Length: 119
Image 1 (cartoon, rainbow, N blue to C red):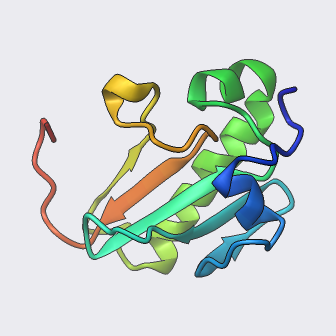
Image 2: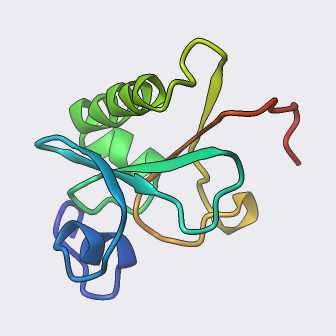
């Protein structure tokens, strides 16, 4: 069920503190932590604490929480000192787009030049 923790979800386990992560921000509805395989000097994931399969499911079921994720992504960029130089927020949705964890999450990338398109 959307919003309910999933036993087999890595990010639900991070929210429950069953799996360690380097947490950089936390709000009532979101958690932000460093990516274990960073693709840029700043690479932080911002997730809703409630389980939603992907960004589209999150936006449909809980648009207020989707807005919280985006707000926290901006706050991460400020904290990481990448807001002025520029940063990217990426939601991968579906296997073909590179989604590997089926819990909605935003990648906050910055700290180096980011070309477009990324690939």
